[in-house]
Image 1: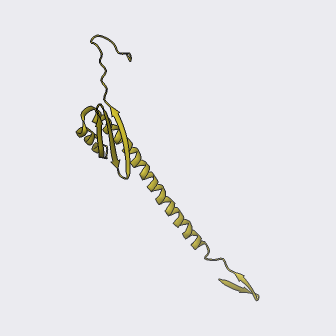
Image 2: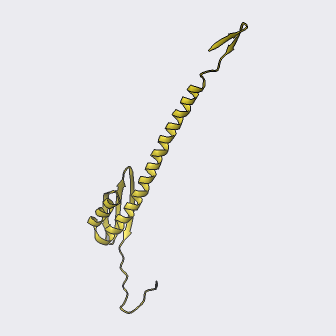
Image 3: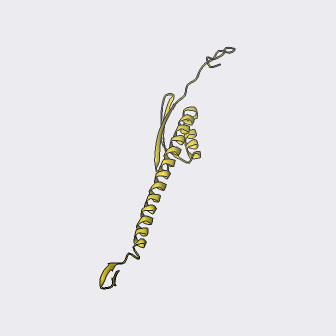
Length: 119
């Protein structure tokens, strides 16, 4: 807006704060959406790693059915299960994240009446 005062033109700055405020609010909203999405992705990744670790341990101990059950109990879906002798590798998906884990079944034989090295 232009205002005349004693024949001289002056520029009036009234009303300039509103567009600036709208830009700041829009940038803040976009930043908030990006932070929430990044947080959700990080949460899914952590949950997928936990579910994959647990599923691999269960699979090594009791087989594919146990791995599927543990993955589901941890909020995930068993995508792949492969057993190589005593070693198991699983892939679990939680939300948008996928994690891979391996576990190996091992048996330590301790003669009766003897202590292990850990005791």
